[in-house]
Image (cartoon, rainbow, N blue to C red; front, side, top):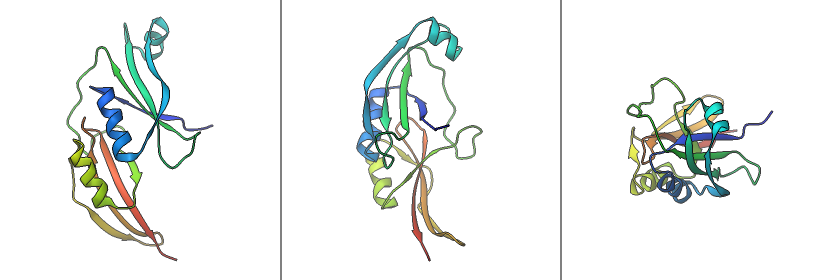
Length: 150
């Protein structure tokens, strides 16, 4: 068994893929997808489903690593406001060298801050520094850095 991708349904898949490429150095995995048909309707449970988008290779896992699949459907439902304690999948997490620097890059590229940078020594593990931010469409991202102790 192998984990292969995480999907984000986006208002504007081109803009959101650009954000993840620029901020997190994700790499496009061609081809661009444009899908529709009874097979898609049947598999998704969405009548007359039509979608477009692209897979992005997540950093740090090589050519066979998991991807972030960013799609826009022709017809989409609205979502609620981002909140760290909302039921369902909570966030994507990226291990970064400098939490403050990447947080600033997220803000410059249209994301928002949900929290403030915080640090805590986790017994037996090390020092965790992290913050929650959102991408330009409100999906929550955790930026984290670990300093390990022997």
